Length: 222
Image (tube, rainbow, N blue to C red):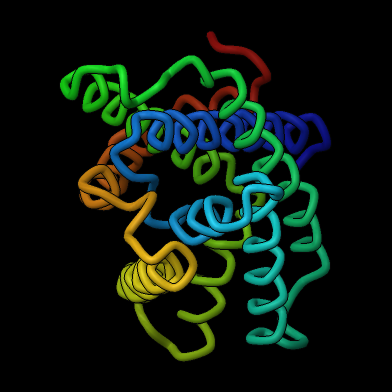
């Protein structure tokens, strides 16, 4: 792979990270529950408001980074250390988008508008994930941890991801009740996102992959 192609691929990956962060922030601002993967960091930010959503997300991603390194041992390649700055950019963008979208106040928005914001957020999140996938250079630590688990225990990636998603969701629920005495940050929007984001991402992957391949190899669209 040439240097110019590598630069283009990392540019696509970074764009995916930005769009994914925007999707998560819009889902959260809709006030119908954040995404399942972001549930635990978001709940922690509600319990400890001195630290932002993005800060807790970065801490969470670092723990997952360490987890995959422990699972893979010597098989953990050095290029995966690039996950650390990618995690930082992702988490920073979550806080940035949360600030940009601060004018969305769920309590004053009609439910249909909140539902529309949620669906738009799911589309943006799915689009961002698709860009990360088709770039084919790096993955964020959450996906890296799932991949490491599936490799270490010889399990299907999709099944492993489902197990990890549900585990994190349960932890977020327990943490919410333990820290706030009630369920917060997780609602019907969490379930909707869990059901449709994967399908949206797959839709975009199938359509972006050929276009991305041409762009990366030629540097321009013909």
